[in-house]
Image (cartoon, rainbow over all chains, first blue to last red; front, side, top):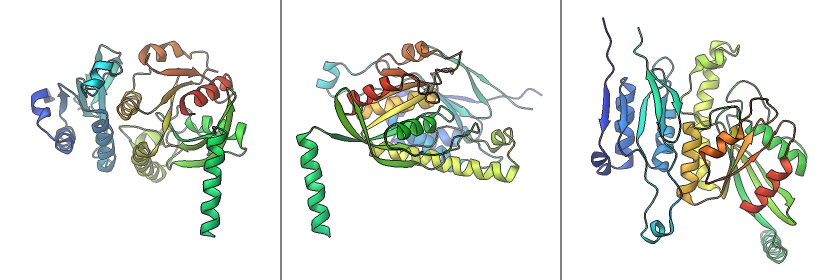
Length: 120
Length: 211
């Protein structure tokens, strides 16, 4: 029987209306049940480290070994005008999945290639 | 005693201002096995003697942040006092089975995995308490790891100085140009922490960026 993997693509609009903890909880709850999550607008750098921190507290032997997360490097440093208008570096599209299922094949500034294993 | 120590600290700060001696707390960050502790040991050996920690081919050998205060580095005609924090390797996944591949038994592998998760959390906590970061990358590996992207993103968001160290230049397959192409907006110094190659250039970069 063919196994399926659920992939949830979450819009930037939805993410914009969530707090950092709401985003992190949403991601971990999905990933821990074997889903692949794609965030249209990604996470801020601070949210990324908080996600890693939270992931570490939830690792359990033979249940959950962590996440595979891939996002693009930031485009550039903030320009003078960005600073004047108080703009901050925005997150970019991010893919997150269970470490034992999602594997990154190749990544550069413009493309992330991953493979998803569906297990036995 | 309190008055005396207060006076001593004030005097030290005053002398520091007069002679432009600066102090910075810097963290050594990077993925497991990128050579953070080897580099920390090299810096400590060159400037104050002793060692920072043990090194091992098994990932996550450093599972607690180790701190060395008051390491004075002289470069570019100036002097800087560093408080160096050698942090545990950052990772997004830790599986005890990976340690068993290095010959550890199951009990030891599980213990190491548990401690490694705590080490990652400690490394993240230290980000809030630093003046700058040396991000150590293995120059033989793909630089686009999420740990590298996340640490760089955090330093940029916090507007804190960052120097990328392209380590393991003693290896024939080292390719630092790939790191420079991945993160062109940041200074990068290729070194071999193991052999000390090009380490003087790193000290100059430390003085320039953190001094």
